[in-house]
Amino acid sequence: MNAGAPVLTIWYDASCPLCRIEMHALLRHAPDGSIALVDCSPPAFHDAAVDAAGFTRAGLMRLIHARDAGGNWLRGVAVFERAYRLAGMNGVARAFGHPWLRPAWDRVYPWVARHRMALSRLGLNALYGWVIERAARRAARRAKACAAGRCEVDSKRF
Image (cartoon, helix red, strand yellow):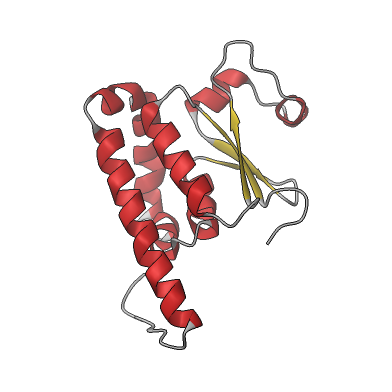
């Protein structure tokens, strides 16, 4: 799909089990090369693109950041919406971007990000990993059906 730069480069906390499971699941299900991951968790982390944009490691660790192929930066829930769409999980992407739900996601996500290690210790990472894989399998089945001319459109969904 992509010759050259990724469509989306995501800076994430690879030391967090929840973050790591989610980002690597997205990477597995996105077309080759469309998503690139950068671990910003090492204390000595340094990145020229991040510096040029005026971001700090502390800011990257507080909220997820990404840059698209056009050089535009995304933070927080916008990153998830774009990444899930690239991975073909359009239902999840629509949920993150839905105009009625987005304000709630924008309020909840900083809390989740702040407590991600505790949530991982409680097992949320395993549960969320299962949910992502289920959504990915469902999206793959739908894509395969559409490619075979058996595409069903459900207009009642987001």
